[in-house]
Amino acid sequence: MRTHSRRAVLGAGIAAAGSGLLPAGATRASGCVRTGTRDKNGMDRTHGPGGDVPPGYVSPDGPEVAEAERRRGAGPVRSMSLTATETQLDLGGHTVRTWAYGDRLPGRVIRVTAGDRLALTLANHLPQSTTLHWHGLAVRNDMDGVPGVTQRSLAPGTSFDYHFSITEPGTHWVHPHSGTQLDRGLYAPLIVDDPREPLSYDKEWIVMIDDWVDGVEGSDPDSVLYEVSGGRFHHGMSHDGPEAGGSRRKGTTSASNGPSRMLMGARSRLLGGDAGDVDHPFHLVNGRSTKDPEVFRARPGDRIRIRFINAGSDTAYRVSLGGHRMTVTHTDGWPVEHTETDVLLIGMAERYDVLVTAGDGAFPLTALAEGKGRSALAVLRTGGGEAPDGSTRPRELRGRVLTAQRLRATDSVRLAPRDPDRTLVMTATGSMGRWNWAINQRPYTPSQRYPVEAGERVRIRFRNHTKMWHPMHLHGHTFALPDDGPRKDTLALLPGRSVNVDFDADNPGLWMIHCHNVYHSESGMMTVVGYRKK
Image (cartoon, rainbow, N blue to C red; front, side):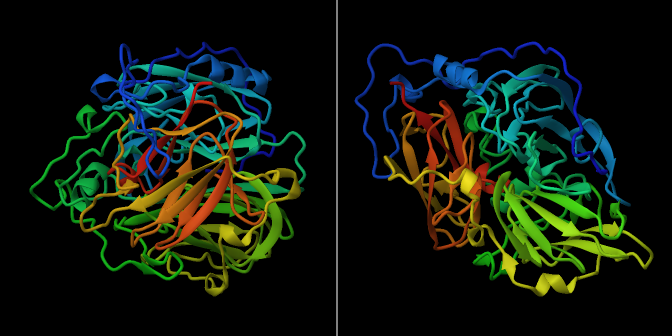
């Protein structure tokens, strides 16, 4: 990926409206229903006949959703298209057959300005169904891209028109929400520019970091899931339920394609112990391996904004830029009080924006796969000097590591002080040995609902009763960390820890909460928060 202008504006136009759909698996309840109850964690146990989705919830294409979208306003329309396709990619000296958006990795940047209306057509040229999720954006619910919850899966050979207003600036990204597809090449940056940008900088670098296994020695993510789950899962749970493409198989414990990718003994003090399950053979920056890294060019003294995005599936990264200190300005798209650091820890799906002042020479931007011993590399070159290689370990990597808990939100984006109206308990449960990942010991099914009501201040009490860390992600909203902590949509939840986060229920619909380790979520560690009809 190359340097992008701060004010790159994509062509305006009019796009056809996407069709409103009853989500697959969300059949409308009719006739008598059983009396419902809520369990101690706040889940609504009401079910219609045959275990259908509980009645009384806002539909993803309901009038409440349409009204919330109307209130966001209708700015200029930015029209574009994206094609998910099978392709061959050069990862920098390693050629693989994989899936990607438009024959490139990452997919081309989707860039708009806050206040715009995005109209994007996704064409599916894959052999599997897919969707597109707008990670970090508070979109209208029927555009959120979760099959079986907010839309029907997009079948091979078909297309879908996503259309919605965007109100908040920030660094975000897009990816599928179907099976293990995220661990292929299906991702792209999504940058929402601020029309009143308060930061001053000369250049910008979008840095997408990824762990890679697809197409290497016959491996693919579905086979990796089959192996690491001990043969319990193949093609994942699927958001439509196991019977809709996520078949369970028992017997062998080895992958059906390629060598073993089971990772044992990956340890990290920063992550509270076990660092991950999968031995990805490559780690990439902007689709390039350490063998042939991307080189970003600037002049000495240039002030550079770097937008970091962790697009990995099983890996947190310890990131530093050799010879430089970084000033953190945003996390997950939201501004924070400026904080200097030598090194960042970035969990899967997290984003950090930083400012650096470029020195003179050639400098390694190193993303160390935390606890796994491998790394990704890019190079900042402003002058002469020998280019760093993949073995380079900047001394900054040994500095004090900055995590989100050390940051504070700016006054402009802090939630107003308010006691929660409702508390939902979300406990991460399961183990690598049994591979029974879940929330509150209940593997995901599309009928799950944790009820909230519009206008409430909702507290989520995240608890981790497992021996692994989990990057927990909330769709359609951002939450605030305690003590004026930053606004985020993804939280690194360490083993044995409990964290309270608050959000305002201001975006009606059905919204996923899940672990962003794709091998955990596709085995059952996800659920749904649903707005009740008034």
